[in-house]
Image (cartoon, rainbow, N blue to C red; front, side, top):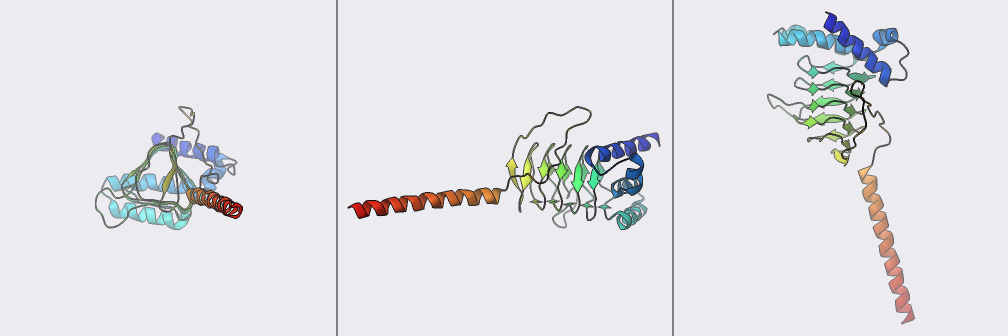
Amino acid sequence: MFKFIKEINEEIEAILERDPAAKSRLEVLLCYPCIHSIISHRIAHTLYKRGFVVLARFISQVSRFFTGIEIHPGAKIGKRLFIDHGMGVVIGETTEIGDNVTIYQGATLGGTGKETGKRHPTIGNNVVISSGAKVLGPFKVGDNSKIGSGSVVLKEVPPNCTVVGVPGRIVIKDNVKIQSMHKPEIDLDQIHLPDPIMQELECLRKRIADLEKKIKEGEKRDENI
């Protein structure tokens, strides 16, 4: 029981650190669906491991009804998970989530079909999964990585990377930040992310401008002749 209370206290501290709207521990405990869903999941996961599958699933569905967050009782969740707002978040049965992970509303950690065994992603430590992102399949998202809003990730992501787009593409590698051992600094910026499509369009624009310049220079030479 003491361990359980300590874990919940850590979850509350994580929310207070990452959400500027949170003003007090009491507010977080009473008003944040993240806490309610995690408490329910800890109970359901314990029952699930002991073979009370139907009861565990029932608890998870009741929690889903009240919080809008669906976490399968088989999922393994580390310390200090923060699910911001949470409505529409789905976490599949064989998902594994590390410590200090932040998930925003509408994100899905799911599978890609009817595979058996390990079919959901493994999320490393200090990962940020932005609004509406879909991480689908039995691969790993490495530590300190960030998944951009609306991205669809279908293959492994190395540590210290930023992924954006559909399908997800790695646009930043080895984006290592100096972190405290006890309270890692987590980059929660979901806006200032590179846009690979715009970068390609900009390259095309410059290429077209160069070609037009060469054509005009050629026309001038012809006129002089």
